[in-house]
Image 1 (cartoon, rainbow, N blue to C red):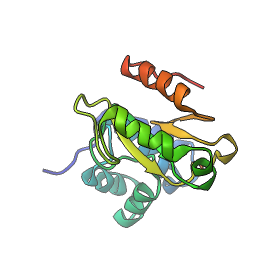
Image 2 (image 1 turned 90 degrees about the vertical axis):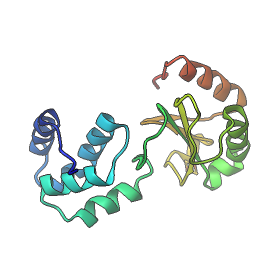
Image 3 (image 1 turned 30 degrees about the vertical axis):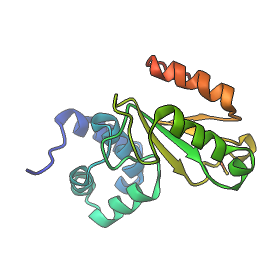
Image 4 (image 1 turned 135 degrees about the horizontal axis):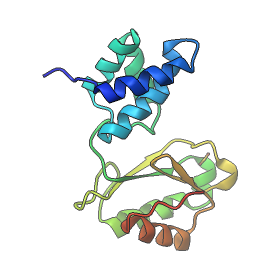
Length: 164
Ligand code: FES
């Protein structure tokens, strides 16, 4: 069955497109909207968005696969993305990632049984000066250590995403 963009989504998309000189400049904000609606960006959603913006499907797919903020499969409520690049690695990111695997009893790319957490490691998040860094959905948590991470997990388990 073909993926249908909701009328509500199309109305929001028209408003977003109006802010940009060209439709393709609205691609990332619209992919984020799509992800907000479904929790991830499905192949069919990319196809429907390509048609809406009159862009080649390959362009939409390339953007979706390049940016790690886009989930391409159903994922947990909170997507924990630990930076694995050099600054974060030197500041202990690997230990934090291992700790998360043990605490959540999942490996990278997996989601906890309760559907709350999905765990990934990702390339540089562009906040190297505050290493180690983890992104949770669209939010960054910087200068992390074991203690801060435990406190954050507790908040998230109770459905609270602290804002920074
Ligand atoms: S190396 Fe981790 S944010 Fe750049």
